Image (cartoon, rainbow, N blue to C red; front, side, top):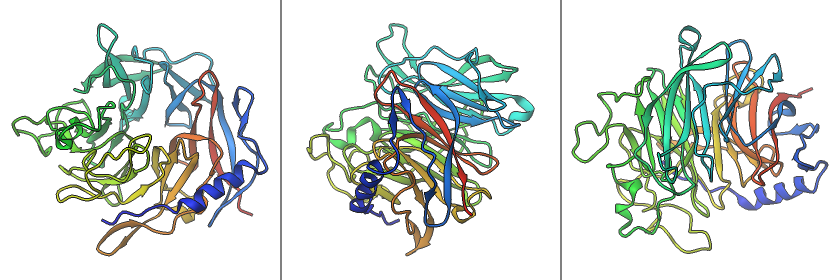
Length: 405
């Protein structure tokens, strides 16, 4: 696979133009949702507010019938019913370690949710002393308006007192296996040697993609099952902090976006047993400019399909499948926090592998707001969870609707 570098001059110029343009992103204590019509290479769209007044929202899931579940990092699961955000949080959520990047994170439904009502939550789980946390996966059932029988079905060996890099994204494949990301928990990138960094070792879950059965147990055909010194849940390793994960059922592909440090965010095609290089190889530097990586390439380590330097701070990742924006069918949609954008990434086959074709210039919604999560609804609308890094403010969930003439 051949990595592609984003044209950042165009990106930054476009973002500045929008920031100085016809709307203001920040209004008072909340994000102002513009009523502009946005023009893209193929479609026009507008934004509609789905829910507002959310505190630190992180993820969402679509319930049968059109209702929504939205996580708030302080530990609340919110319900949007009949288009209205209910005041009361859904009872039954776990106690979370709400500090740094931790809290209540991902929400996902079992592929057979309509029959079994099973729901999954990832969260930062505190230890008994409250001075460390790790990424945990809990499973329960959504009965009426509450979660019942919630229990942890997987607790990552990724304990740390540090606040960053929990990962926490979930995706089911066509066979019902559940993939889960765990960040490196901010482990020192200057570990000597780099090859001994926790993300490079198989004796822990830091910086890994995991593959589980739907009950949290280990599939027998995972790549490191039975290998001495390796944890059997691991599917791939050498990741930093993956906060975007989506499965392409039509092509049987698992896509992941992960944060680089200062530069070097990546889009990776995740494959069984592969090493994705962090922190041995990469395209970023430490904050302040100090070099981290030994090189950009190394035999036995995978190259990203796309990378961003400077970083856009990749967040949620979705695969567009729907009729609302037909020209975007099969495109990946990657959220950006620091980059304040949604990057539309058309995947093409070329030069014997996969690469990204002609990207949207400027990116969708460039410069408007920090995009925390991107989801495509069953009806084909694109939903965005908006982030507020300032703290104390509230943000909305919005959706993109077609405004073509």
